[in-house]
Length: 286
Length: 209
Figure 1: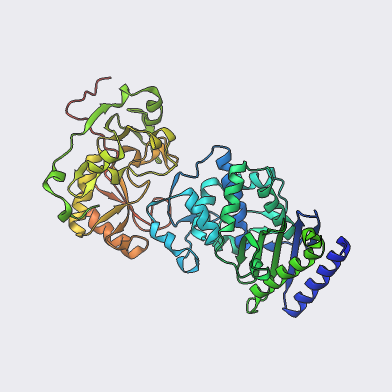
Figure 2 (figure 1 turned 90 degrees about the vertical axis):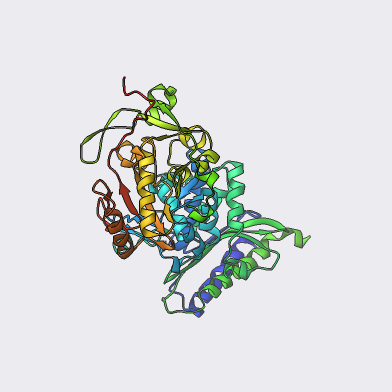
């Protein structure tokens, strides 16, 4: 199947899925490292980034480590008290909404930065995210994104900052931008040691009902999900033993009452895999 | 903080504290600790930073030094990576001598509430080089503590903070306790207490310049 055929088939499938699953919007970006195929469907449309923004925080954290600004073995005071990007009012994150409630038992004490990085990604901890972002700084994280030439990812604040949300200050991303972010992680922007650690953290993701659910069992995915009331995303690097990996960002927007959102992302993941199989699995063709 | 029943007579025996004059420390420590230097607080008042310190050889020693029946020195010197690297990663560590007064106050409080009292990280002594507050914070005098938990109660709401604030304030006129709130000078996730900008000159030391 030619590249044009792959893109055409995938476009059709995404349009069909969007209509069938009643999605308000779907955006997909793919970079296949086997064939260098780049695919983008609504790839420049901006979405609320939800928890996919945590990958940007992760990049900034490891860049800071590479620059000697911090050591991953350092300890950080665990404190559930943050300042809003909108006017600096105090806010707290809720353990009820956090997939890593055990971290709240450490409030008052310290946690290793490396452990917080794991909690931020594998358990999508909002508390860990805000602690790390407060420590490295939003401004610094933005500088890192620019230096990494990641366009299409806007990191403006911590998570659960409702005052900022009400003023329209949100973390936003495009599918193209998030693929660019994952490409920066895979590339030479970080030291080799940091790159390996970042990918390992992404591989330890505990929420696997989206991109991995659409793939054959032997696929391994370094990824990060993101869900809020209307957004349901997953971005990741897909490793298959028979071929070079591919990078995919799947962003969706639904009415908040719509069910089957994760299943839709999984179906899109399956469609991407099936499409790339037509061009990418050279070892299977010979 | 360990329950009193776990303490034996050997643990109660006070360990000898080594007091040193900060003016005699190597330069790399003096630039961070700034012994005896004048500093202004948030209100513009002038205060002299602590000059005399206890020298602590190791974390083990900090855990062994019992400043008061229920408080070891280690509980009052836990900081995170916002502390200056030299003071964080290397021993000896130096803590202002007035920290013994803080420990006595905390022990009085512990007796009143009859429950373990937990001091937060960055909530005891922080050096003037610490990124939080620096030399303008009273924590640089070793006379302030942030209590984040009493027994099983996390001090993260108005009810618990005001309850323990009243108890702490009853311990003496020199005790300052921040009220609950989210404005400047208030707290909403711990109980801040302090004794003011107190410095202590050990008996064997001289204030002569």
